[in-house]
Image 1 (tube, rainbow, N blue to C red):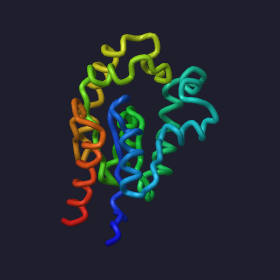
Image 2: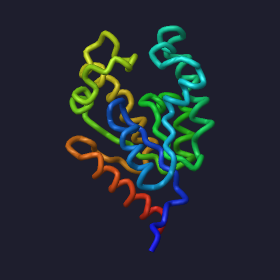
Image 3: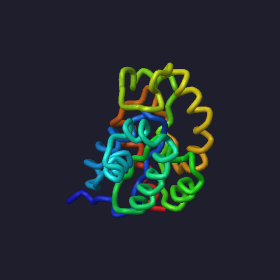
Image 4: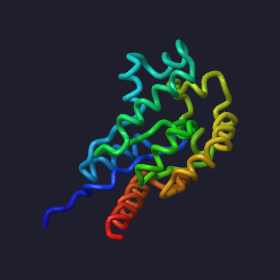
Length: 178
């Protein structure tokens, strides 16, 4: 018997930087035979420069404008969408996310995230800052916004990526059968 792929829904992954949106998205893409779109890659193509360059040349506000443009172009498509960690900061983005479920929050403690992204120089919000302190501040600001948008919350601390993928697939199957 041929395995059935899920025609719908098209999951959107949210969470702080380092929680595994891209890497889990790639695994989910293989399992569901559905393309992965990393919103950061869409933004880089729109701007014609890397994310650190966007921040350095134009600032975070410009980056957030590009993020909204990219999200509105890609959300609801037949893809798995891995967003950037700050996508929930703008109300228009939260409305888009809530209008296109399921939104899956990969929740992780700042300590877990700081260990995962230690030494990653491609994260402008952490430039010249203590990663744990900055991630703690971001968590305080963003966790309520993630919770507002999320249809499923998966605690990442101590859970392997493959286990997260299985949990997401089980959730999607339940949604399709209800």
